[in-house]
Length: 135
Image (tube, rainbow, N blue to C red):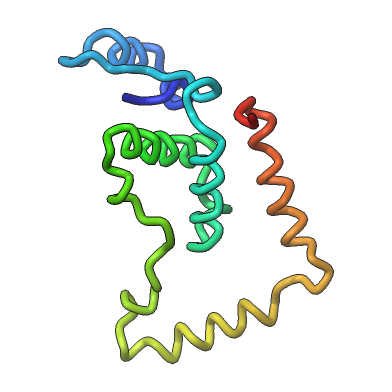
């Protein structure tokens, strides 16, 4: 299963034709606007913000993750989907902890005082309406 938005990102016509007609299995293509739930998209956005990945994920990336969340829920496997990100501290080598902490302190101090970063993020959040998924 995939989304129409993913297929449209395949620029090469020959590759797209192969994906749609020649795979050794039938690929179910869902329309993002009608199939995805805003609730799943909101969860993905919030999770990405919590992990710091929000700015690096495209709208289509987040839609694919939301598709996975919905698929898990429909299969009764939503308990396998993380609700909150794991603490990244558990992945940091102990010998580099001081460097990570110093870098984190620097990021906090250098953020905009006027809130322009927050305003930019809000603009990106509002973009979901432009793809026709707000309900």
